[in-house]
Length: 115
Image (cartoon, rainbow, N blue to C red; front, top):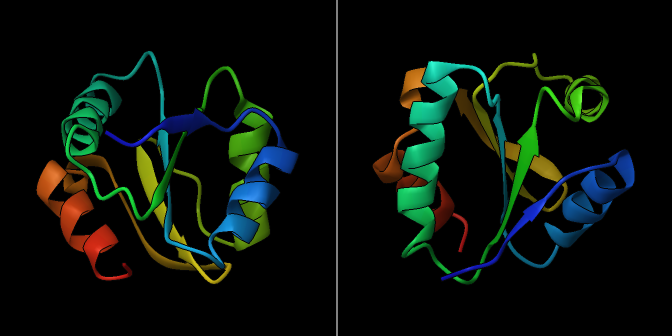
């Protein structure tokens, strides 16, 4: 099972984006107080249990690390949503989606495209 790291700072975000030059990087943003986000987080955890190890995985708590969540959305020019998934390859966001579209199957399909 792959390791899931937490994004806590914009520096962490920049390192993750740089890492996408080597392999796909999936960043998932969740809120600890939103039922829809809890559902998406369960889907992500289910995906991670047998996710490809050729990618890197990060999560971001949009309540606790609000400034990072808003900062990264502004930097990549993609509207902030929660829950939200962002997939990067070669420092570009190659896929993003949110809410009920975040399923184990969707994560698997999108990450697999870039491995």
